[in-house]
Image (cartoon, rainbow, N blue to C red):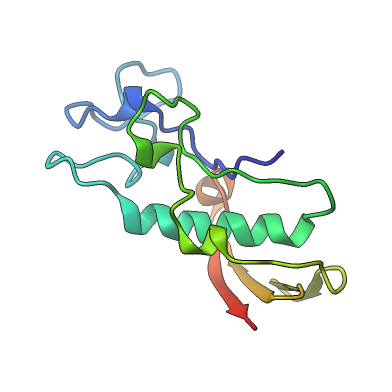
Length: 146
């Protein structure tokens, strides 16, 4: 099983009054890796940033998926949190047919692609530094449906 979680930004980090942490052992603060992944003071869900994170995580998963693999994307495994933190089943991307892989992933430089019966995925990775790589590499993703 693969959860797709790059960050564990659970319910406890949803207090906009908390400052961002400046060191690992600091208490009552929001981890730097959760920046943009917690609700704002107006209770707005960070949907756009989460959807981008999901697309990158899903593309990474599709590069290694094999028979009997399954995935779930969440930023908190706690189902007592707000639904948007753990249930992404409403996303159209997760409800489209994939089909069997037509071969292994292909690599050209920092670009990976893989083709399935009903879809192809392309992931161009970009790494800007150690801090970003510690919490997931950014990139550009394309899902092409047939």
